[in-house]
Length: 565
Image 1 (tube, helix red, strand yellow):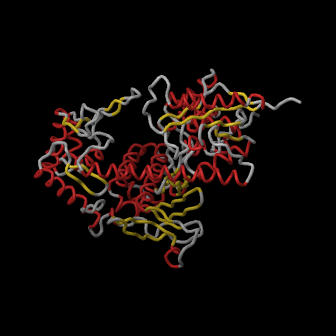
Image 2 (cartoon, one colour):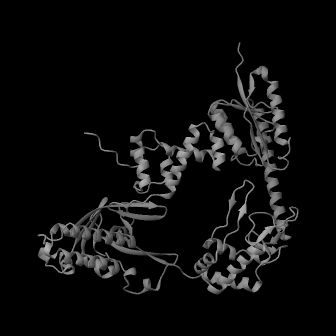
Image 3 (cartoon, one colour):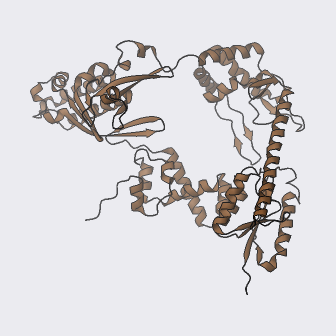
């Protein structure tokens, strides 16, 4: 009778990085013990796989470990039958995570073994023993975490620097055993300059502009991996955070409290308190409400299209408003939403965006009619030049004085699912163009255009007519990476090696690399910026990219190519 072969993979882990640089470290000791155990089970058909799965310097309280993820992927792919660990807590210290691992193993008929803890999980007593061991492991991890948090809090009360990103103006002490910050003289000048600028200007926007002019830069950091970060122009958020950082006053912050630090201050006390008072005063000012918007009768505060448009049910769109964070937000809503309460079929349009879109549609229509001599019922080339000038003046008036021109020019409007209809006032149009009303072409007073709404986050966008090409930079970058990654995988580069080289997770790389298999027509549309409205990378990878090109067109709302005759 042939003994079934059991493919074994050894998993090792160490929580800290101490000693990992030694020729023979804890991971090697665990591996040798597990390898010896596998060798002892050779008569049972156990065979050790050549790949090693080592996670050094990673906690057992999470499953986000590179080697563990590779191990689980190998199990799901059917390449591994048995996980061998030195102790159960090397695999995980969390009961909930252990349950996920067991479910993954059970789904493919795999198992695991601990070489120093003998128990049989096929029996109820064995499962009880395992759960008790994991409970103690999780308890140990939580107690250790509490002890570390208490140690950090006590150390910060003594003014010690307990790690993290060193702020601009300071460096770590050259002696790694001394937990203090030392002043970086060059960077300290930048910090003092920023505090002085805000004290004088009292405006973050002006400080950002002046800092950029002076060539002030953020702190440049070199990581152990060789990656260099920082050294860029300071953003508004970075400057605001810097101005609020009590480290520059010689303090150490822990949660909501500050303690006297053992490092020297960079900013004197008077300047610090002046800047904090001005920042606090600036944060209390209401934003988003200009003086002009509060003036009675100002176009910016007036609903220009009141009584002009109806929705697809014939209900009149009524102006309304709400106040949010001190800002007055205007809308056009179906009248039944005001008089009759909630209705899922009702329309609710942001007023400024709707007025801008209507203005653009009318202006484009007038420009098109003038260019193709469609304004007059009987085209007259003798006045075509003068008519073009009058149309240009009217379009300029729509853009610069909408409060007076737009309501008079529009007689009525109708919104339907997918399109908008606008009827122009022929008498006002004739007067604006300095021609007789009877000379206006009837078709020129009726406008029909595509109309759609798209929600992006919390913001509602309105789109009409044909969109101008607008390439999405995020989508373009991701598509370029997808082709590069797909080429590397085709040439035999392992997925985990490629993910490590690109500094991304394997799941991230796997989902984005699929974009290289989009149809040529879809990729050309993305490159030209003519992808459907609302199409994003997140939507492209949701549920995976279909291999069938026709299915891709349907899923991503691309128009399928016309069939050949």
